[in-house]
Length: 465
Length: 67
Image (cartoon, rainbow over all chains, first blue to last red; front, side, top):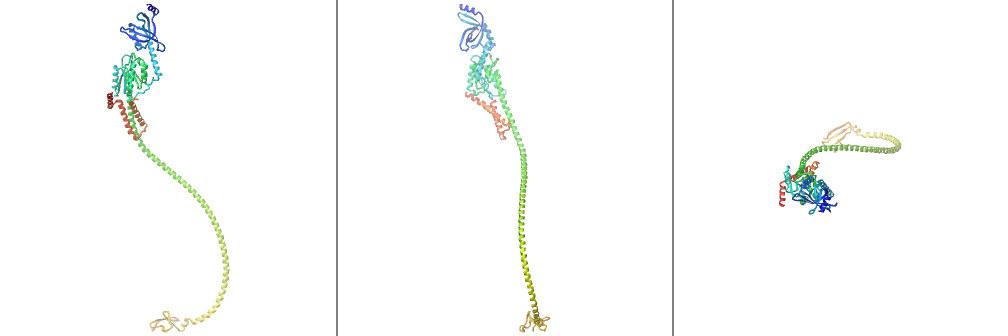
Protein backbone atom coordinates (compact mmCIF):
# COMPACT_ATOMS: atom_id res chain seq x y z
CA UNK A 1 0.00 0.00 0.00
CA UNK A 2 2.70 2.43 1.07
CA UNK A 3 4.85 1.65 -1.96
CA UNK A 4 1.91 1.94 -4.30
CA UNK A 5 0.90 5.31 -2.82
CA UNK A 6 4.44 6.54 -2.70
CA UNK A 7 5.07 5.71 -6.33
CA UNK A 8 1.75 7.16 -7.40
CA UNK A 9 2.61 10.34 -5.58
CA UNK A 10 6.18 10.58 -6.76
CA UNK A 11 5.51 9.72 -10.47
CA UNK A 12 2.14 11.29 -10.87
CA UNK A 13 2.82 12.57 -14.42
CA UNK A 14 3.35 10.82 -17.66
CA UNK A 15 6.97 10.51 -18.82
CA UNK A 16 8.61 10.11 -22.24
CA UNK A 17 11.19 7.34 -22.09
CA UNK A 18 13.42 5.58 -24.59
CA UNK A 19 13.66 1.80 -24.46
CA UNK A 20 14.15 -1.32 -26.51
CA UNK A 21 11.54 -4.06 -26.81
CA UNK A 22 12.94 -7.39 -25.62
CA UNK A 23 9.64 -9.25 -25.55
CA UNK A 24 6.20 -8.48 -26.90
CA UNK A 25 2.88 -10.36 -26.99
CA UNK A 26 -0.76 -9.62 -27.49
CA UNK A 27 -3.43 -11.42 -25.56
CA UNK A 28 -6.91 -12.37 -26.59
CA UNK A 29 -8.38 -9.25 -25.02
CA UNK A 30 -6.36 -7.02 -27.29
CA UNK A 31 -3.96 -5.94 -24.61
CA UNK A 32 -0.29 -5.82 -25.44
CA UNK A 33 2.35 -6.86 -22.95
CA UNK A 34 5.99 -5.96 -23.38
CA UNK A 35 9.30 -6.17 -21.68
CA UNK A 36 11.34 -3.02 -22.10
CA UNK A 37 15.07 -2.91 -21.57
CA UNK A 38 17.87 -0.39 -21.68
CA UNK A 39 21.35 -1.40 -22.71
CA UNK A 40 24.68 0.24 -21.97
CA UNK A 41 26.66 2.04 -24.62
CA UNK A 42 28.26 -1.19 -25.82
CA UNK A 43 24.76 -2.50 -26.59
CA UNK A 44 25.44 -5.74 -24.81
CA UNK A 45 24.79 -5.27 -21.15
CA UNK A 46 21.25 -4.68 -19.91
CA UNK A 47 21.23 -1.88 -17.39
CA UNK A 48 17.47 -1.55 -16.86
CA UNK A 49 14.44 -3.72 -17.41
CA UNK A 50 10.72 -3.22 -16.87
CA UNK A 51 7.39 -4.68 -17.70
CA UNK A 52 5.06 -2.55 -19.77
CA UNK A 53 1.60 -2.80 -21.16
CA UNK A 54 -0.55 -1.12 -23.75
CA UNK A 55 -4.16 -1.51 -22.91
CA UNK A 56 -6.44 -2.64 -25.64
CA UNK A 57 -8.24 0.68 -26.14
CA UNK A 58 -4.91 2.48 -26.57
CA UNK A 59 -3.29 -0.35 -28.52
CA UNK A 60 -5.96 -0.45 -31.22
CA UNK A 61 -5.14 3.19 -32.02
CA UNK A 62 -1.39 3.11 -31.51
CA UNK A 63 -0.68 -0.06 -33.46
CA UNK A 64 -2.00 1.01 -36.90
CA UNK A 65 -0.59 4.48 -36.39
CA UNK A 66 2.86 3.04 -35.72
CA UNK A 67 2.69 0.65 -38.69
CA UNK A 68 1.51 3.44 -40.97
CA UNK A 69 4.28 5.74 -39.88
CA UNK A 70 7.17 3.28 -39.79
CA UNK A 71 6.13 0.48 -42.12
CA UNK A 72 7.03 -1.83 -39.27
CA UNK A 73 5.23 -3.92 -36.66
CA UNK A 74 6.30 -3.63 -33.07
CA UNK A 75 8.77 -6.39 -32.44
CA UNK A 76 11.70 -7.39 -30.26
CA UNK A 77 14.90 -5.47 -30.89
CA UNK A 78 13.00 -2.35 -31.90
CA UNK A 79 13.77 0.90 -30.14
CA UNK A 80 10.84 2.99 -29.03
CA UNK A 81 10.11 6.37 -27.59
CA UNK A 82 6.96 5.99 -25.52
CA UNK A 83 5.00 8.03 -23.04
CA UNK A 84 4.42 6.01 -19.92
CA UNK A 85 2.81 6.32 -16.58
CA UNK A 86 4.31 4.34 -13.75
CA UNK A 87 2.34 2.26 -11.28
CA UNK A 88 2.89 -0.38 -8.74
CA UNK A 89 0.51 -3.21 -7.99
CA UNK A 90 0.84 -5.49 -5.02
CA UNK A 91 0.19 -8.55 -7.15
CA UNK A 92 1.63 -7.56 -10.53
CA UNK A 93 4.46 -5.39 -9.28
CA UNK A 94 6.04 -2.48 -11.13
CA UNK A 95 4.51 -1.66 -14.49
CA UNK A 96 4.75 0.99 -17.15
CA UNK A 97 1.54 1.76 -18.96
CA UNK A 98 2.20 3.03 -22.44
CA UNK A 99 -0.06 5.89 -23.41
CA UNK A 100 1.57 7.24 -26.54
CA UNK A 101 4.35 6.37 -28.96
CA UNK A 102 6.66 8.49 -31.12
CA UNK A 103 7.23 6.60 -34.42
CA UNK A 104 9.86 9.04 -35.76
CA UNK A 105 12.26 7.92 -33.06
CA UNK A 106 11.93 4.33 -34.20
CA UNK A 107 12.30 5.42 -37.78
CA UNK A 108 15.44 7.31 -36.91
CA UNK A 109 16.80 4.30 -35.12
CA UNK A 110 16.02 2.03 -38.08
CA UNK A 111 17.63 4.49 -40.43
CA UNK A 112 20.67 4.60 -38.22
CA UNK A 113 20.85 0.81 -38.15
CA UNK A 114 20.50 0.75 -41.91
CA UNK A 115 23.34 3.22 -42.29
CA UNK A 116 25.44 1.10 -39.97
CA UNK A 117 24.71 -1.97 -42.10
CA UNK A 118 25.69 -0.08 -45.27
CA UNK A 119 28.87 1.17 -43.62
CA UNK A 120 29.71 -2.32 -42.45
CA UNK A 121 29.25 -3.73 -45.97
CA UNK A 122 31.56 -1.03 -47.29
CA UNK A 123 34.10 -1.67 -44.56
CA UNK A 124 34.04 -5.38 -45.34
CA UNK A 125 34.82 -4.52 -48.94
CA UNK A 126 31.86 -6.47 -50.28
CA UNK A 127 29.46 -3.62 -50.99
CA UNK A 128 29.78 -3.57 -54.78
CA UNK A 129 30.83 -7.18 -55.36
CA UNK A 130 27.52 -8.27 -56.83
CA UNK A 131 27.05 -5.00 -58.67
CA UNK A 132 30.38 -5.44 -60.41
CA UNK A 133 29.37 -8.83 -61.86
CA UNK A 134 28.66 -8.69 -65.54
CA UNK A 135 25.23 -9.85 -66.58
CA UNK A 136 25.69 -12.99 -68.66
CA UNK A 137 24.55 -13.27 -72.24
CA UNK A 138 22.09 -14.75 -72.83
CA UNK A 139 20.20 -14.20 -69.59
CA UNK A 140 17.80 -17.11 -69.72
CA UNK A 141 18.52 -19.48 -66.86
CA UNK A 142 16.99 -17.93 -63.79
CA UNK A 143 16.99 -19.17 -60.21
CA UNK A 144 13.96 -17.65 -58.52
CA UNK A 145 13.79 -17.10 -54.79
CA UNK A 146 10.26 -16.32 -53.71
CA UNK A 147 7.35 -17.66 -51.74
CA UNK A 148 5.90 -20.65 -53.56
CA UNK A 149 2.41 -19.70 -52.46
CA UNK A 150 2.49 -16.21 -53.85
CA UNK A 151 0.35 -15.56 -56.90
CA UNK A 152 3.08 -13.23 -58.16
CA UNK A 153 5.34 -16.20 -58.85
CA UNK A 154 2.91 -17.74 -61.37
CA UNK A 155 2.47 -14.40 -63.08
CA UNK A 156 6.22 -13.98 -63.20
CA UNK A 157 6.75 -17.36 -64.85
CA UNK A 158 3.95 -16.71 -67.36
CA UNK A 159 5.39 -13.36 -68.22
CA UNK A 160 8.81 -14.90 -68.86
CA UNK A 161 7.69 -17.94 -70.85
CA UNK A 162 5.12 -16.13 -72.99
CA UNK A 163 7.50 -13.46 -74.13
CA UNK A 164 6.78 -11.98 -77.55
CA UNK A 165 10.19 -12.76 -78.99
CA UNK A 166 9.93 -16.47 -78.27
CA UNK A 167 12.93 -16.73 -76.00
CA UNK A 168 13.32 -19.91 -74.07
CA UNK A 169 13.80 -19.63 -70.31
CA UNK A 170 14.85 -22.19 -67.81
CA UNK A 171 13.60 -21.32 -64.35
CA UNK A 172 13.91 -23.03 -60.99
CA UNK A 173 12.05 -22.07 -57.85
CA UNK A 174 13.87 -21.87 -54.54
CA UNK A 175 11.11 -21.22 -52.03
CA UNK A 176 11.65 -18.92 -49.06
CA UNK A 177 9.77 -16.85 -46.53
CA UNK A 178 9.83 -13.40 -48.05
CA UNK A 179 8.76 -11.15 -45.18
CA UNK A 180 8.42 -10.91 -41.45
CA UNK A 181 10.26 -12.95 -38.87
CA UNK A 182 12.78 -15.42 -40.18
CA UNK A 183 12.67 -14.00 -43.73
CA UNK A 184 16.34 -13.12 -43.79
CA UNK A 185 17.43 -16.56 -42.61
CA UNK A 186 15.06 -18.28 -45.04
CA UNK A 187 16.29 -16.26 -48.02
CA UNK A 188 19.93 -16.92 -47.05
CA UNK A 189 19.14 -20.63 -46.94
CA UNK A 190 17.59 -20.44 -50.41
CA UNK A 191 20.68 -18.60 -51.69
CA UNK A 192 22.87 -21.37 -50.26
CA UNK A 193 20.82 -23.91 -52.21
CA UNK A 194 21.19 -21.93 -55.41
CA UNK A 195 24.90 -21.71 -54.77
CA UNK A 196 25.23 -25.51 -54.81
CA UNK A 197 24.27 -25.54 -58.51
CA UNK A 198 25.00 -21.95 -59.37
CA UNK A 199 26.80 -22.84 -62.61
CA UNK A 200 23.42 -23.88 -64.00
CA UNK A 201 22.06 -20.37 -63.76
CA UNK A 202 22.73 -16.98 -65.26
CA UNK A 203 21.15 -14.93 -62.45
CA UNK A 204 19.09 -15.08 -59.26
CA UNK A 205 15.78 -13.25 -59.02
CA UNK A 206 14.67 -12.41 -55.50
CA UNK A 207 11.04 -11.47 -55.88
CA UNK A 208 8.18 -10.89 -53.51
CA UNK A 209 4.83 -10.97 -55.12
CA UNK A 210 2.23 -8.65 -53.65
CA UNK A 211 0.95 -8.71 -50.11
CA UNK A 212 1.64 -6.37 -47.27
CA UNK A 213 4.52 -4.03 -47.70
CA UNK A 214 5.13 -4.03 -43.97
CA UNK A 215 7.86 -5.77 -42.16
CA UNK A 216 10.54 -5.81 -44.81
CA UNK A 217 13.26 -5.18 -42.24
CA UNK A 218 14.88 -8.45 -43.33
CA UNK A 219 16.07 -6.72 -46.50
CA UNK A 220 18.05 -4.24 -44.44
CA UNK A 221 19.71 -6.91 -42.35
CA UNK A 222 23.42 -7.19 -42.58
CA UNK A 223 23.57 -10.99 -42.91
CA UNK A 224 21.20 -11.12 -45.88
CA UNK A 225 22.68 -8.08 -47.55
CA UNK A 226 26.18 -9.55 -47.14
CA UNK A 227 25.06 -12.89 -48.62
CA UNK A 228 23.53 -11.13 -51.60
CA UNK A 229 26.54 -8.86 -52.09
CA UNK A 230 28.94 -11.80 -52.17
CA UNK A 231 26.80 -14.10 -54.28
CA UNK A 232 28.68 -15.25 -57.41
CA UNK A 233 25.67 -14.80 -59.70
CA UNK A 234 24.10 -11.43 -60.46
CA UNK A 235 21.08 -10.82 -58.21
CA UNK A 236 18.01 -9.12 -59.58
CA UNK A 237 15.56 -7.89 -56.93
CA UNK A 238 11.86 -7.27 -57.23
CA UNK A 239 10.85 -6.98 -53.63
CA UNK A 240 7.96 -4.64 -54.19
CA UNK A 241 7.85 -1.95 -51.60
CA UNK A 242 6.87 1.66 -51.54
CA UNK A 243 9.58 2.92 -49.27
CA UNK A 244 13.17 3.72 -50.06
CA UNK A 245 15.35 1.00 -51.43
CA UNK A 246 16.37 -1.71 -49.01
CA UNK A 247 20.02 -2.51 -48.46
CA UNK A 248 19.55 -5.75 -50.42
CA UNK A 249 18.28 -3.66 -53.35
CA UNK A 250 21.35 -1.49 -53.04
CA UNK A 251 23.87 -4.33 -53.19
CA UNK A 252 21.98 -6.28 -55.85
CA UNK A 253 23.24 -6.27 -59.43
CA UNK A 254 19.90 -5.06 -60.73
CA UNK A 255 17.01 -3.64 -58.67
CA UNK A 256 13.46 -3.50 -59.92
CA UNK A 257 10.36 -2.43 -58.06
CA UNK A 258 8.23 -5.45 -58.77
CA UNK A 259 8.46 -9.02 -60.11
CA UNK A 260 6.78 -7.79 -63.28
CA UNK A 261 9.56 -5.28 -63.72
CA UNK A 262 12.12 -8.04 -63.16
CA UNK A 263 10.57 -10.20 -65.88
CA UNK A 264 10.41 -7.22 -68.23
CA UNK A 265 14.05 -6.42 -67.53
CA UNK A 266 15.16 -9.99 -68.25
CA UNK A 267 13.18 -10.09 -71.51
CA UNK A 268 14.65 -6.70 -72.47
CA UNK A 269 18.14 -8.05 -71.87
CA UNK A 270 17.34 -11.04 -74.06
CA UNK A 271 16.00 -8.72 -76.74
CA UNK A 272 19.20 -6.74 -76.49
CA UNK A 273 21.25 -9.90 -76.86
CA UNK A 274 19.13 -11.11 -79.76
CA UNK A 275 19.32 -7.71 -81.47
CA UNK A 276 23.04 -7.68 -81.04
CA UNK A 277 23.18 -11.09 -82.66
CA UNK A 278 20.89 -9.89 -85.42
CA UNK A 279 23.07 -6.82 -85.97
CA UNK A 280 26.12 -9.02 -86.15
CA UNK A 281 24.37 -11.26 -88.63
CA UNK A 282 23.36 -8.31 -90.79
CA UNK A 283 26.76 -6.72 -90.57
CA UNK A 284 28.38 -10.01 -91.43
CA UNK A 285 26.20 -10.55 -94.50
CA UNK A 286 26.77 -6.98 -95.62
CA UNK A 287 30.49 -7.25 -95.01
CA UNK A 288 30.77 -10.51 -96.85
CA UNK A 289 29.02 -9.09 -99.89
CA UNK A 290 31.10 -5.91 -99.56
CA UNK A 291 34.24 -7.98 -99.37
CA UNK A 292 33.26 -9.96 -102.40
CA UNK A 293 32.45 -6.76 -104.26
CA UNK A 294 35.75 -5.28 -103.18
CA UNK A 295 37.62 -8.40 -104.21
CA UNK A 296 35.95 -8.24 -107.59
CA UNK A 297 36.83 -4.58 -107.95
CA UNK A 298 40.34 -5.23 -106.76
CA UNK A 299 40.70 -7.95 -109.34
CA UNK A 300 39.52 -5.59 -112.05
CA UNK A 301 41.64 -2.72 -110.85
CA UNK A 302 44.51 -5.10 -110.40
CA UNK A 303 44.36 -6.14 -114.03
CA UNK A 304 44.28 -2.53 -115.17
CA UNK A 305 46.97 -1.52 -112.74
CA UNK A 306 49.00 -4.47 -113.76
CA UNK A 307 49.04 -3.56 -117.42
CA UNK A 308 49.66 0.09 -116.58
CA UNK A 309 52.43 -0.89 -114.28
CA UNK A 310 53.94 -3.21 -116.82
CA UNK A 311 53.81 -0.49 -119.43
CA UNK A 312 55.41 1.91 -117.03
CA UNK A 313 58.10 -0.59 -116.17
CA UNK A 314 58.76 -1.28 -119.80
CA UNK A 315 58.97 2.41 -120.52
CA UNK A 316 61.30 2.92 -117.62
CA UNK A 317 63.40 0.01 -118.76
CA UNK A 318 63.52 1.44 -122.26
CA UNK A 319 64.56 4.80 -120.94
CA UNK A 320 67.20 3.21 -118.80
CA UNK A 321 68.55 1.29 -121.74
CA UNK A 322 68.49 4.38 -123.88
CA UNK A 323 70.25 6.33 -121.20
CA UNK A 324 72.78 3.55 -120.80
CA UNK A 325 73.28 3.47 -124.49
CA UNK A 326 73.90 7.18 -124.65
CA UNK A 327 76.21 6.95 -121.72
CA UNK A 328 77.97 4.03 -123.28
CA UNK A 329 78.39 5.83 -126.55
CA UNK A 330 79.63 8.84 -124.77
CA UNK A 331 82.08 6.85 -122.75
CA UNK A 332 83.21 4.91 -125.76
CA UNK A 333 83.63 8.01 -127.87
CA UNK A 334 85.51 9.60 -125.03
CA UNK A 335 87.70 6.54 -124.81
CA UNK A 336 88.11 6.47 -128.53
CA UNK A 337 88.95 10.12 -128.60
CA UNK A 338 91.45 9.64 -125.87
CA UNK A 339 92.82 6.59 -127.63
CA UNK A 340 92.96 8.49 -130.85
CA UNK A 341 94.67 11.37 -129.22
CA UNK A 342 97.15 9.03 -127.62
CA UNK A 343 97.64 7.28 -130.91
CA UNK A 344 98.04 10.56 -132.63
CA UNK A 345 100.45 11.72 -130.03
CA UNK A 346 102.43 8.55 -130.22
CA UNK A 347 102.32 8.46 -134.02
CA UNK A 348 103.56 12.01 -134.12
CA UNK A 349 106.26 11.00 -131.76
CA UNK A 350 107.02 7.94 -133.84
CA UNK A 351 107.00 9.86 -137.10
CA UNK A 352 109.12 12.56 -135.58
CA UNK A 353 111.43 9.95 -134.32
CA UNK A 354 111.34 8.11 -137.62
CA UNK A 355 111.94 11.18 -139.68
CA UNK A 356 114.75 12.01 -137.37
CA UNK A 357 116.13 8.53 -137.82
CA UNK A 358 115.54 8.68 -141.55
CA UNK A 359 117.18 12.01 -141.76
CA UNK A 360 120.13 10.69 -139.87
CA UNK A 361 120.16 7.61 -142.04
CA UNK A 362 119.79 9.65 -145.15
CA UNK A 363 122.56 11.91 -144.12
CA UNK A 364 124.63 8.86 -143.36
CA UNK A 365 123.75 7.29 -146.71
CA UNK A 366 124.27 10.55 -148.52
CA UNK A 367 127.53 10.95 -146.82
CA UNK A 368 128.68 7.44 -147.72
CA UNK A 369 127.25 7.81 -151.25
CA UNK A 370 129.16 10.92 -151.92
CA UNK A 371 132.20 9.29 -150.41
CA UNK A 372 131.65 6.32 -152.67
CA UNK A 373 131.05 8.45 -155.72
CA UNK A 374 134.07 10.40 -154.99
CA UNK A 375 136.17 7.27 -154.74
CA UNK A 376 134.54 5.80 -157.81
CA UNK A 377 135.07 8.93 -159.82
CA UNK A 378 138.63 9.04 -158.63
CA UNK A 379 139.06 5.41 -159.61
CA UNK A 380 137.35 5.95 -162.90
CA UNK A 381 139.46 8.97 -163.65
CA UNK A 382 142.58 6.97 -163.01
CA UNK A 383 141.22 4.12 -165.08
CA UNK A 384 140.28 6.51 -167.85
CA UNK A 385 143.69 8.04 -167.92
CA UNK A 386 145.17 4.55 -168.05
CA UNK A 387 142.73 3.55 -170.75
CA UNK A 388 143.51 6.65 -172.78
CA UNK A 389 147.18 5.83 -172.64
CA UNK A 390 146.51 2.27 -173.69
CA UNK A 391 144.17 3.42 -176.44
CA UNK A 392 146.71 5.78 -177.82
CA UNK A 393 149.33 3.06 -177.76
CA UNK A 394 146.85 0.64 -179.35
CA UNK A 395 145.98 3.22 -182.05
CA UNK A 396 149.53 3.72 -182.94
CA UNK A 397 150.20 -0.02 -183.02
CA UNK A 398 147.15 -0.75 -185.13
CA UNK A 399 148.12 2.08 -187.57
CA UNK A 400 151.49 0.62 -188.00
CA UNK A 401 150.21 -2.83 -188.41
CA UNK A 402 147.66 -1.76 -191.02
CA UNK A 403 150.15 -0.08 -193.33
CA UNK A 404 152.43 -3.22 -193.39
CA UNK A 405 149.56 -5.58 -193.97
CA UNK A 406 148.15 -3.40 -196.69
CA UNK A 407 151.20 -3.75 -198.68
CA UNK A 408 151.44 -7.49 -198.29
CA UNK A 409 147.75 -7.84 -199.09
CA UNK A 410 148.10 -6.01 -202.36
CA UNK A 411 150.67 -8.50 -203.44
CA UNK A 412 148.66 -11.50 -202.44
CA UNK A 413 145.67 -10.12 -204.26
CA UNK A 414 147.44 -10.28 -207.52
CA UNK A 415 148.48 -13.85 -207.12
CA UNK A 416 145.00 -14.96 -206.07
CA UNK A 417 143.50 -13.32 -209.11
CA UNK A 418 145.16 -15.76 -211.46
CA UNK A 419 144.21 -18.80 -209.56
CA UNK A 420 140.48 -18.12 -209.15
CA UNK A 421 137.82 -20.44 -210.89
CA UNK A 422 136.34 -17.44 -212.55
CA UNK A 423 139.54 -16.63 -214.20
CA UNK A 424 139.93 -20.28 -215.35
CA UNK A 425 136.24 -20.60 -216.51
CA UNK A 426 136.57 -17.54 -218.50
CA UNK A 427 139.39 -19.22 -220.33
CA UNK A 428 136.91 -21.89 -221.47
CA UNK A 429 137.12 -24.37 -218.87
CA UNK A 430 133.98 -25.88 -217.29
CA UNK A 431 133.29 -27.44 -214.06
CA UNK A 432 131.08 -30.53 -213.94
CA UNK A 433 128.89 -31.05 -210.95
CA UNK A 434 126.95 -34.21 -210.08
CA UNK A 435 124.52 -33.86 -207.23
CA UNK A 436 126.22 -30.56 -206.31
CA UNK A 437 129.70 -32.12 -206.12
CA UNK A 438 132.57 -31.60 -208.51
CA UNK A 439 133.21 -34.56 -210.87
CA UNK A 440 136.97 -35.12 -211.17
CA UNK A 441 136.89 -38.33 -213.22
CA UNK A 442 134.77 -39.64 -216.11
CA UNK A 443 134.57 -42.94 -214.17
CA UNK A 444 132.42 -41.31 -211.74
CA UNK A 445 129.74 -40.91 -214.40
CA UNK A 446 127.29 -43.51 -215.77
CA UNK A 447 124.72 -43.17 -218.56
CA UNK A 448 121.59 -41.48 -217.52
CA UNK A 449 123.27 -39.39 -214.82
CA UNK A 450 122.22 -35.80 -214.61
CA UNK A 451 125.15 -33.43 -214.61
CA UNK A 452 125.46 -29.69 -214.28
CA UNK A 453 128.08 -27.86 -216.27
CA UNK A 454 129.20 -24.60 -214.70
CA UNK A 455 130.33 -21.96 -217.13
CA UNK A 456 131.78 -18.54 -216.38
CA UNK A 457 128.47 -17.00 -217.38
CA UNK A 458 126.12 -19.70 -215.98
CA UNK A 459 125.12 -23.29 -215.68
CA UNK A 460 123.81 -25.96 -218.14
CA UNK A 461 122.26 -29.34 -217.23
CA UNK A 462 122.78 -32.43 -219.34
CA UNK A 463 122.30 -36.17 -219.28
CA UNK A 464 125.13 -38.65 -220.02
CA UNK A 465 124.78 -41.02 -222.96
CA UNK B 1 31.93 -19.40 -64.52
CA UNK B 2 29.05 -21.15 -66.19
CA UNK B 3 30.09 -23.15 -69.22
CA UNK B 4 27.13 -22.27 -71.40
CA UNK B 5 27.55 -18.57 -70.78
CA UNK B 6 31.16 -18.50 -71.81
CA UNK B 7 30.36 -20.51 -74.90
CA UNK B 8 27.75 -17.98 -76.00
CA UNK B 9 30.12 -15.17 -75.22
CA UNK B 10 32.98 -16.91 -77.02
CA UNK B 11 30.75 -17.40 -80.02
CA UNK B 12 29.82 -13.72 -80.04
CA UNK B 13 33.46 -12.72 -79.63
CA UNK B 14 34.49 -14.96 -82.48
CA UNK B 15 31.67 -13.60 -84.59
CA UNK B 16 32.71 -10.04 -83.81
CA UNK B 17 36.30 -10.81 -84.66
CA UNK B 18 35.24 -12.29 -88.00
CA UNK B 19 33.19 -9.18 -88.71
CA UNK B 20 36.10 -6.98 -87.68
CA UNK B 21 38.31 -8.84 -90.13
CA UNK B 22 35.65 -8.38 -92.76
CA UNK B 23 35.34 -4.67 -92.03
CA UNK B 24 39.05 -4.17 -92.16
CA UNK B 25 39.06 -6.20 -95.31
CA UNK B 26 41.79 -8.40 -93.92
CA UNK B 27 40.34 -11.61 -95.21
CA UNK B 28 41.71 -13.33 -98.22
CA UNK B 29 39.12 -14.29 -100.71
CA UNK B 30 40.10 -17.90 -99.98
CA UNK B 31 39.09 -17.51 -96.35
CA UNK B 32 35.89 -15.68 -97.08
CA UNK B 33 33.76 -18.72 -97.74
CA UNK B 34 35.11 -20.55 -94.71
CA UNK B 35 34.59 -17.52 -92.49
CA UNK B 36 31.08 -17.00 -93.78
CA UNK B 37 30.32 -20.62 -93.01
CA UNK B 38 31.82 -20.35 -89.55
CA UNK B 39 29.88 -17.15 -88.84
CA UNK B 40 26.66 -18.81 -89.92
CA UNK B 41 27.34 -21.70 -87.59
CA UNK B 42 28.05 -19.33 -84.73
CA UNK B 43 24.84 -17.41 -85.36
CA UNK B 44 22.89 -20.61 -85.50
CA UNK B 45 24.45 -21.73 -82.25
CA UNK B 46 23.65 -18.42 -80.55
CA UNK B 47 20.08 -18.49 -81.79
CA UNK B 48 19.73 -21.94 -80.36
CA UNK B 49 20.81 -20.56 -77.02
CA UNK B 50 18.26 -17.76 -77.21
CA UNK B 51 15.27 -19.49 -78.68
CA UNK B 52 15.94 -23.11 -77.87
CA UNK B 53 15.70 -26.07 -80.17
CA UNK B 54 14.51 -29.59 -80.07
CA UNK B 55 17.91 -30.83 -79.00
CA UNK B 56 17.98 -28.33 -76.15
CA UNK B 57 14.53 -29.40 -75.02
CA UNK B 58 15.58 -33.01 -75.13
CA UNK B 59 18.58 -32.19 -73.00
CA UNK B 60 16.39 -30.54 -70.39
CA UNK B 61 14.14 -33.59 -70.38
CA UNK B 62 17.20 -35.75 -69.81
CA UNK B 63 18.22 -33.51 -66.93
CA UNK B 64 14.78 -33.87 -65.45
CA UNK B 65 15.04 -37.65 -65.67
CA UNK B 66 18.32 -37.58 -63.80
CA UNK B 67 16.82 -35.49 -61.03
